[in-house]
Image 1 (cartoon, helix red, strand yellow):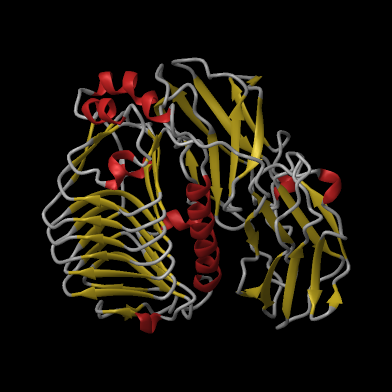
Image 2 (cartoon, rainbow, N blue to C red):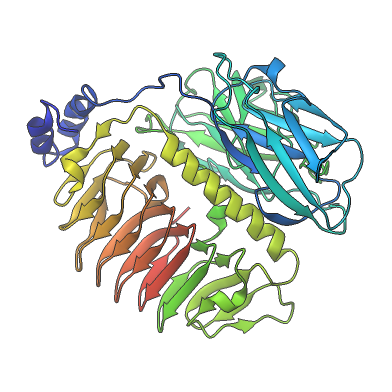
Length: 479
């Protein structure tokens, strides 16, 4: 989209950062999107569609794109069946209307295919139902899950300092959690002994819980977040022990949208569903994962299986490689990570009201990009160097319904303290980084990601098809 402000904006994007913050809203005045009452959708399900080896004691849950009418979430609108036979159970919705959970009356049958369905009678709080029935299938394994969940990451990190006063506090778990167990009584934030007022929500990946303070946090102050042992996973396993961590605020306010939660997909620097290939010698710093494809689709790495067969190593890999056919717990962990990756993609793609729409008609070469949400309905190209400028806690989300193509020898660089972990590129098409180019950020690709000869990347390559490294190097971003 071209607006009357396009010329002003292009000039502004080469000005110093402080000036950009003043001019940035001009891009949105003619091109912002709003929610026009579209039908709600299902953002993610647990188990995910196509999941296998699902525990016999699993509950079935779904996360919606918006708050739903609680009374519309019942056993009549959320069905689980074995073939044509309904599974007996109960349905409960999260207090915020964003989640719903089906609890079977007894353990599911082993080695059996089940189908979950949410019907069009499940309605948003505004009264509009799902556009179509949402149906997915999964297959049980042979055992129940008795492993307690664990907290795998927090944001802010433990003992973190300089935390923005408008920060949300999140915890990421090792497995999908029961949304009904994540509430203000089980996830608290305190300043000393004084509780912080706020709301608790379930992240779209199913493995993340988010505490949103009602007001900005006090500056230069230490806070403690805590999770109780009443927090449970979808198999009914509680945290083995209470978990808490502390952090200290600064005085700054983070700019840009809320960060995209990667869930356990964030445990991998390269994650794909069909293939990961290397033209030797590439260098990967961090763990790799592939699912549902087997280890035979990890090619060019000369992998050496560990004695446990849970993972493999390679001289090209500073980390571990995991595949769907490796030993337990790799298959289940990868199924969760892939589901989280798909949910993160949907989250990034679905963010409304962009700050910048069709900026430079997709040719962003030579620009300096400030924190915000950017949207293009065409291919995005980087034919010359780009600077991403902002603070260490600021966030960027780039949405494109086309490809992302970076020319050979060009660079995306960071300034002002910007961090790759807070930069999200949602790409519906192919992503290609030219030979000897350098890129920053996390790519959530609907299709494939290719790093050509000599290309380098500081970030994560998370693809719903394949990742190809052609004598390239990719390094996971600093936490």
